[in-house]
Image (cartoon, rainbow, N blue to C red; front, side, top):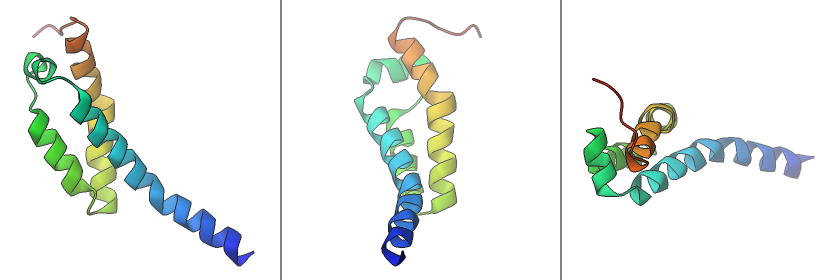
Length: 85
């Protein structure tokens, strides 16, 4: 039973790290021109995501913001879709 509890606890604590890694790797793979078209800075988001890994809550907030708000903007710019204004 102790082994199961250790595995569950470890998995729970790895979730924020996995989400931050996903956000960082996604930001890294997007082309620079898509970031420019979306009016965002790739380097800034990669640095913020990397630094956010140092804290649990900060990493989740930064990575969550990137994945929910910024990532769709970059993907739209990559596909040639732009927002008005």
